[in-house]
Length: 404
Image (cartoon, rainbow, N blue to C red):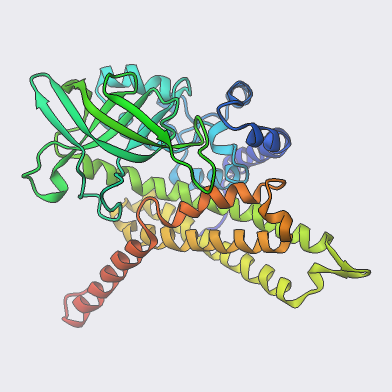
């Protein structure tokens, strides 16, 4: 394989790295301390700087104002942006908007694109994706209770969702709702756009996670849909195609997530090494002199690099052979990178001692926000089970003489 980076990508990465280090890291503590909602004016100013530099929307097609990067190149960018909790948001590459833009760009009608896609891609509004439900296992997304009943030229939506990321302040939600309960499991649900000012859309609360409810973009909401009426023209794609569209959204999305997590790993690893070299345990004795710390450094570096190569290979496979060819790799990176992330963060915190669990460093922010990496977009256990079944099935076919 060719591991070289094209000159144009190298130049782009250098510009982005410079912006993250010079403009984001110095403002990070203040913005995180205030919260995203209270820091909106400053965040919008930083976004304006990114746009002026021509760096906005690395994952967006050029037709809607982005850089039009391949999945592989965007993975490299996402790694750099993940170094700061502000990175993806300031560059217009944040979830769930990035995934919603992909759906609207592919399935949106001209009217939907004009009303929702264009301002979303420009960063003028935010959105959310409303799928997970409190009373049904997220590990089985076919078990949805939220229903959308057709009534003439409208859908009437009733149900409850939670962990709807960034709903606080969003202009619209893309809702997964059952439209045909009698259909086979993966053809029951449909995606529907629901403006958040629609009567019957109620943000019940921002869910408190590890003691932080957050606000604005940095939040996860519980939503009640109570006789919520929207025009049938708000449907995205064909009726019953919700799960198919969701799978298309999740494939590239997992590459984005994993590369972001690897950016966090790099930040935590840098902090681990800096702390080990700087912290004196006794005169002339540093934390870095301890063999256990040396082992952590070596292990973390090996696991980060291995996880990075696995993720970049998955992105390369999607770019060159399509998502179907990369299904196994995508499941592997989802649980493997999430586990590496947890391990690296934990060791960086441990090396910082009591300081590591305070808000005086960014480590506690990463730890509380990213423990969910092993749960959302499918629990690690489900990914392991699915990929193991696929691998074992391949072995059975070969043993029976059926080839790969």
